[in-house]
Length: 411
Image (cartoon, rainbow, N blue to C red; front, side, top):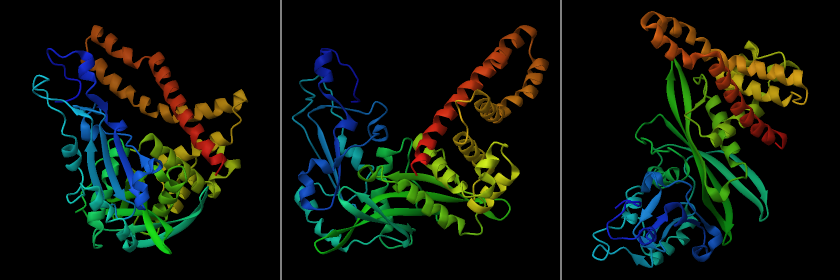
């Protein structure tokens, strides 16, 4: 029975005592050593659970529920179990059934996972033989409180032995951390995979831990080109806020640009966070192009900007315009009313373009609607409504641009 369903004879408080928020009861770990199993600092939790437990993200039928979903850090060998202090009794609670928690999760992860913690612990030492899949494209270091940490980015494909099974385990994180994320068709050879691993010292040698990954699909672009579209970008929570997303996207960009068949690179329905990442990286890259030099930005968006962005960076015209607006705002003194007004009008001219297409649509309405019907229909096309929508869109863009600028300021 789904959480939130009422039943005759049960008090509301008693019913709610068997409801918990799925996001709060699933413990995920990336285990490097056996002591991690009991170390709460290595635990993180999903941000999203609606694709497993429904839109409410609730689980019904248990008190003090705890789900353990553990992975070995590199190979992602999986352990799944659950515990609770009390389970709803169909006899005592008028036939109400508890949600099938383990079944719901097990349907999303590959078979063969461990259900016994001792069996899982036996796989931890075997991590010593795990090696990243694919071809090494880039390596870099990060300085943290624990000292220097080394990371490597690889490009892989499904022809590599063992990678298909590894990807099946890895992709479960998409459901937990990417809104509207979904599994991809791995049998389609047009998918490209870029993976980050941390190379760390352990017992006198080196081991690898999975950090995150990016997928991109190579679409056809008329007449004889390719248009890669980035689909998923994910850095696992223990590794976030260390700049891995930037390194991953830049590495994928460089690899795609080396292919002379690539026309431009796009992103599929990016989340707000992914959109900021893309805008930041594109701004960093465009800053080195002559057409985007500070002294030229206030002159407006030019054909040279679009051409250089496309030829040098494989950025399409629409995204190049967006980058221009962010970089122009960076050079605008918003405390000066006239200077900021020029920027605002420039952005609104772009935002207003779709509204200009309404003129032909309005003419069609005039021909087919009765006068009284036309009056009602025209309410949505009033000058006041258009101006209000334009201002709202401008403010949304401005807020986003400022957040990208904050990151540019410390880059």
